[in-house]
Length: 429
Image (cartoon, rainbow, N blue to C red):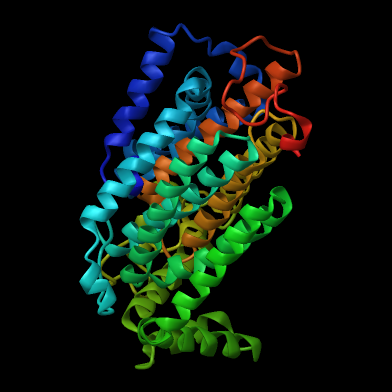
């Protein structure tokens, strides 16, 4: 989770260390995870991605760009076992993380610059977009962390402490997201906030919580209204160009012609113009091998495309990143893993293994991330890699704990996951 604040590759070494400690010192057993069909799919996909990368590297000398990252799926089940054996540490880890987030955001936020409407880069990231994506994760996580306390019947003292920290973190995160001027993150937060509102209404009917959530939504709406001029200044031209492209497509004009016109138009903002060039190139590469993709060789084809002179090969669309490498078949397999993960965590929530707020957080983060990669290749960055590991770890840990609860296994008994059998029915509901 630290990648949301400080953009480094330390999370990779942390993951390796955690898995090593789990299997070497805690004597955790990995074999039961291999009886899980989803674990087999993840490992098989990871092995396939790694072998395909090595084949392309050895046979054609083409190393591609960040190809080996797709082999991370090999570690998904092991990360689940690691989270399962560390379950009792989740409460203090979350407290430490959000306290750290509060300190780091407070120390790094250029308040005067943001108030003046200037462009800033949040927290400790390489650029503003990465920082805005990280702040979005923190905002959503802090919100559900607070809701979890009410749902599970935490003590009044715990509620007060968590709420104070969460509100401060949420305020700083939203403030930094506004300052980052990332239109993609602004767009991704629309469905995320919608889900946050709906899940609060569905899962929590406590009057105090509902009143607070409604007040927060009204406050956010008022804040957006107050800075509407600055938002329009940074996002208006992009929105107008997107609307014009949509209208041309709706009129029946071919996609390639519409994109070419937009690229050549002086009205198209530079950031969108570059993205359109990247996406046009990507579509040309995909057309060569739409079903299975071009593996490492996609870069070789890229050099022959119409806009090969564009200064980078980060496609600024996570779905295109997958399609150029693995085609529709690869995208379908990854979609299966994601949707299965969401369904499994939902089942765990329904069985009381975790709170409903925890599942709502899991779902909202998935939707939010899915929208952020429409305009950025976050799945090729540290924040996306780290999120993938955490997403998978939660899925497999919940699966193991659910199986344990159903009597199929005898793993560690849940102690902090959500409403337990000892909590009165009125609290669980």
